[in-house]
Length: 427
Image (cartoon, rainbow, N blue to C red; front, side, top):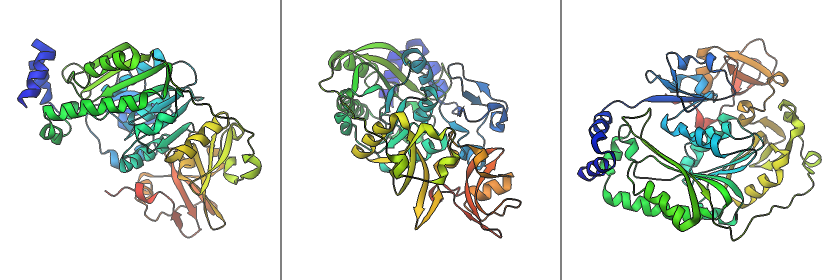
């Protein structure tokens, strides 16, 4: 690690000793609260302090057992490094109105869920992850966050070349050497070398070249890493400005000894180069309301604002004004989630989708609800058998402290637990 020490000493000068002292301290713990709940109702925030640059971010005094908190599984909050929440300041400064936004390297979903909360509800957010297993984790987190204007894809950066000049905003938290994770992941220390840094810097430039054409001229590009060295940070941002064509708007490092959270670097750039092509999506008449029908549309607030589309063996609702864009993405990319899933089919039966249960578009007054106690909520999240009394037979929404967790089918003497098998608590 002598090479790493030299890099830090060159970058920080007299502050290097403070950095290395802070490197030995325990990692901080922070969360970001979903707009679908009131922060005052979250016990996880007891003793927490607000993060100054994130309106929904809180630093916790210690790390609780998140796994056994039903509010986490219902999407009430997201556990995220405080430093990466600075994305909020970038969006507030440089994004205005409804936009098409791509979060390119989105798993596990910290920045995507943050963007979903920050962007105009009329925006379209595509959350992409190239690694299949990580893309499944991303899908889970985006689903629980509950926004209807999101799409989750599992594609390579080069697959977005066909989207010439289509995006107004592209966010790329690129794979890096992970120096900022040294306190959190000992393996990152073991794996680090100058050769790894060079390999990462080269790979980052390849990713940037692949994706650059999808951003419109004048669009915003947000580049970030969880590392400190200038090869992957300032040098690459200078290369973007010089070789790809952009104006550097701002850039900032988050060091252990200076700020909350783990190590982080973020830069905002405005694209100045022209696009060779521009994607145009034809609009067509929406016949879905005549062609597709499901009683679960009654569970949506303002159902008239949505169009119905067939997706993954079921029916999904997507914002009507973005219908054609949703369809184009689903037809041209490997799409894992699209809008809000309303139901799936099993024979002739329509089964309510988990995404509907946790969606911000859900109208709880239109469905049968049961507010479970803590023990029952944990049993439900473990996908164990639960017994509920005083509700009618059929599909029932299980809630905890008013927050929807998912569905059961009440048969009277017992319930079929419909919580997704692959998301269940295994602890």
